Picture 1: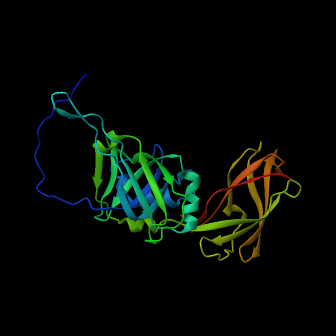
Picture 2: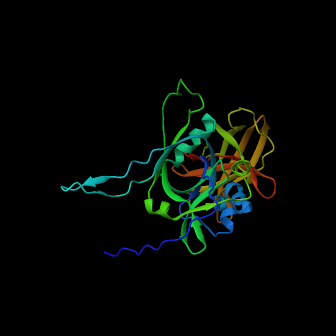
Picture 3: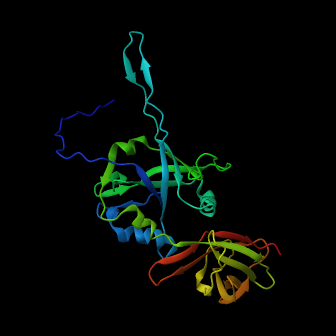
Length: 300
């Protein structure tokens, strides 16, 4: 056993409040920043709304209510009545996020996945943990959702997210930063959410599928998309899969032809294969509209 030597240090002549948690950012597990990029607005704009799927590593959520649910430390008392700490509790929190019911539904696919979470406060602080020299990351955690009826006493607290942190030692190395942007600036980077309704399932004979694309929570159909906006990031087909034709039928309805490229020849997917599709629109630099990803299995 080796215990470090504690050396006394000075105290700051400025005392600033940390503030209350008013937002958090989910980043992919293993996402790291330098001291400079951690507080660079452009870095987070890319992470939130990059046109490149692999570069979209972040998502931000505004918080309406934050409750620290970390257990108290465990204290043991000896037979001579001496007390000492016996283990450190693992931090946790219950947050209620300021989103729509449709937004909350899309979070279901993220439950159980590990993230590195960056926290934000209403005093303008941004919190991460020191990973190494000139390296900062979020706090390792999982999220869990609550499937329940809306509360009757406070309508704002409808959408609960549990944050279960995994590494108490990360909170010994907290990095407190004061970026030049506010949390609401990052929320403004989030693309407008889209909902997808499958009108006609994919068939192996025609290679076609018909969809309805609407703005999330409004039902307003979105028009003007081209084939490249219907991205296929995943499939179990033997060859690359892409949307080759997208016919805009008006009011948000699209007839798509989705093919795999077999030796340079577009071929319909076969029964037993599947593809995952995500729809987005961009301004030439960042995504401005984006759907959740959905999976379509070829059954006929």
